[in-house]
Image (cartoon, one colour):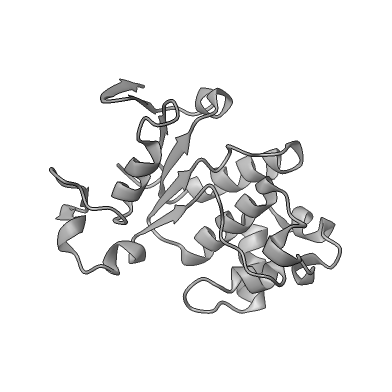
Length: 194
């Protein structure tokens, strides 16, 4: 896989999509075979090393009580507000943050209950942009997407894809139809479609 390449993995519930995402990011170690990054077996690297190269944006983005800014500062390096604003702008999400009552300083309440599922994914994508790693794995990032966040999410994904490898784990057929390279999982079988 090369920078800028986009691969979609799809299949029915239970086919192993999330397991594959965790294998690709070094969170799981395979029982047999290897997962290689730059010619290196991920299992042979120090445990923290895959996290310096590959980022996983899960379907359920972890949030703390506070503001979007507080939640974006959770990434390593404790980025300041200017760096966060630059990432938001780079991903084309300034309009979204400005639509919040107090922008990045909007109180979200317990469990970030004021944000939709799609907006939580936008937080996850900004975190990924702040990390600026070579490989980005999105695990069902569009599964619970709402109409209001669909376009900003697609714009952000297209921007992130420009200079890194992007692997999208997707269940929704609409997501798969707009993407160029698809790998389909079906139980124990791997069916590819380019």
